[in-house]
Length: 405
Image (cartoon, rainbow, N blue to C red; front, side, top):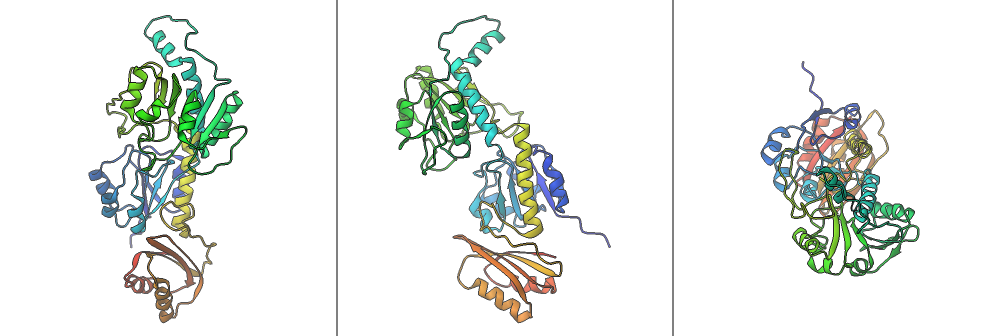
């Protein structure tokens, strides 16, 4: 009799190959597609896959999740997860993992490089040389020492930028909606307006949320110091790009470095247009803040290990859309039941009663819930899997069942 092939994980968008060995050792079969996929291709190529690995260009919306009902998990090999409908995925019993810290250093280093480049107008000088024009001048070129850096969002990246900036002799102020302990001599301010008013350069490190969408518009740009500069290596929805272009044209803003955009191409072959293109002292990069070999390898290992643990043991620790549940390794003579169900009263009692009626002894059990979904792991004495599965599927609130032997 032919052996059943191992479950598959489909990796898109040239995820670093460091993930492959970890996933293969966990018992998954790795398949790759180089680019992001549109909805039609995604439904076709991922129809029978157990896990899907993506980066920032692939969108997994409600329709995509519902078209992949057997998908056990979505692995976001990046920091953000706003490209995934997390709520629908959770209700489908599809676990979503990401790598919230693995490219922190890479983004922080690029931000500091841009702070220096903007103050020295390096890209304008370089462009003139490339065009065959020699222009040696100290006009509008400044040291960063003694300048004030304003950080909006003092999380993992913002706080690292803070430390690096202080090592260059900069004064650092920051604003965050949550109370954050300052590192070094950084000074917290109690409003975005105050940070904008005192900073020579402002760098943004906030997530994409309804609250941050368009948070830097014409009004906020007008609150900045004349000639101040702004950097966005966070999310493309944060800055009103036409308003920023207008401010640079009128020289109220002295320059900008932008790595993320409201709309980004899905492949390297696509054309791209930006209202900031061609403006003086503007650094435009194609969403490469975390694109270093070191960061991508770290992300690949981090997310692959999370997927491998979930596949092998059912552990959802660090998942972003379902309850975090973890039990120690089970004994070899036990069966592990992984059960996602709707979070309504009485389901756990029904599960326990069903197993008791079958004469199945429960050795360990752990349940966690969020507003929509509950996830329980049960280690039980060995029993016929098909019988248990059929009985638990008959519970109306069941979303997904998986068994590990």
